[in-house]
Image: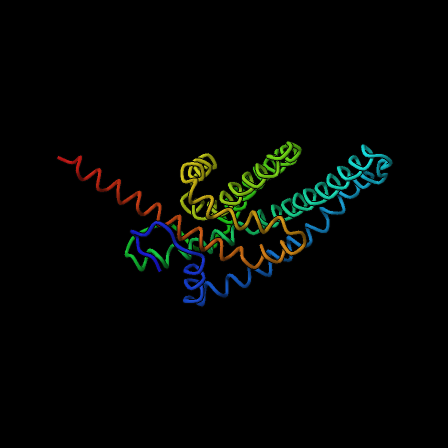
Length: 266
């Protein structure tokens, strides 16, 4: 495990942290099953919706006679499969955003439990509460919905950016990396009652950590169908991973702030 001076906790260390505490193992298993079910159901419905709206696209291939025709045919095939890939990614994110919103209070509870265990080991204080209360449940659900709405905006931007030649797919990946980081940062930050603006500023100002947090979830989302299983299975792990790294950054920041204040005290 890491101490307060360490700048980064690995995924492996986060996994061992979970398995050292049976309560975290049980809570993670529940969330894996619940998140997987909600995401799968939402993905199936999203695919039906998109197919209903775009099913007439790419039905008639172009005339491939001649050199220009063959080039046009190859371009048509590339565009067709790129379109299928992107729409599947979008379908997954729409489904996952719905599951994300509905499960946010439970993941915030998991994050708060991790922080309480970690800070008890350091004899420091962190989140104010780690109990599931009805009033906080709806507050956390509202925070999840706000992040979900940001996700819909990101998805719309990604769909438009995807049509930029060459750089488009890279920019889409970057967008999803930082959005994935925001999704996970939302959990420990919500335990501190941070605003959405403060959460976004944290992700941007700590961009190197945000990339480490968001890159694997973003890459997993590209794999159709399997992404549902992978994200459901690994989401609790990424939550713990993000929470531990978030704690380290905030503990170090508070430590430096206290040192600065002590020097400023006459």
